[in-house]
Image (cartoon, rainbow, N blue to C red; front, top):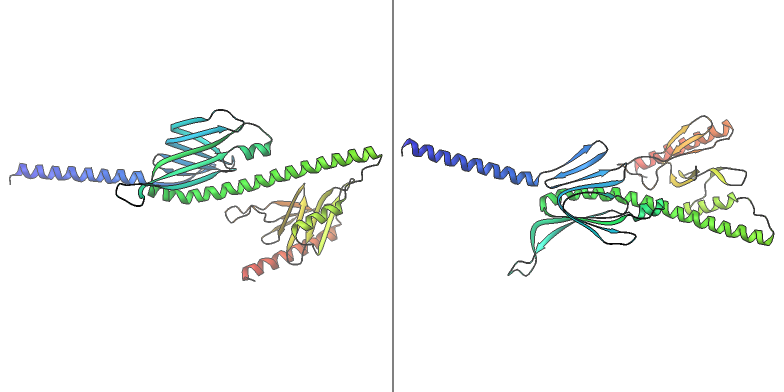
Length: 327
């Protein structure tokens, strides 16, 4: 074998090696994913698309180089459809994220055969946000990204689970807010009817009955505290209320907000003329440990307020220790 032939063989081998390297690198790039933290958002990145959680805006932003978006106006009208490259902002409230494997019916096969690809579907609606904000308009949206390679979809599934947990919390919170709005509207309507009835009967409406309100809170909480205090205004409306059990269960009301909780992990601060108590609500989690706070005991004598502070701290510390020790 002469030197020219050897050089030719070596060049061909090198070219094949380089081509194989670039082929493998291209395949790896197609399957590469990552989750990055950016200012104000958390992003999942993959070849052909990325998805961002925007917590402050309570939106999910999706960019896809190839996707399908269908939007149906909530007030009626023609559907809006878009295919190809797209960017969409979807409300977190009511959001659903699904990852589904795609199978094919191959000739001669009795059962469907996995294709190696998946479809990611985002389903969202402005209905809940509009109901709380008392606005009209908006859309029901379905965004589909198909031909997603299975390893990429499997990686995205973990991020999708996180998105779904976050969206479910926001949905639950808004549903409670909407239910509270409806309850208040119904109470106002009943009060207006009662006022009209009393006016027609020549009677005067009585001031607010705070004892009935406390009874309703205790019924909702499922307990009546061993220690309690309340402050009302001139019309008998509750300004603040605290109801505490020896086992650490507590009901708090202030600033027109009410919570039934426990002192586990609670924050308790004296602000001079009042106490600020932070407790876990339905939205508390290890990932989002924010405690809603309630300011109570305004107007109480300093000695009574100090007794409350000592009692709360003692019961909280005892409850924390019991939980840590598992009993």
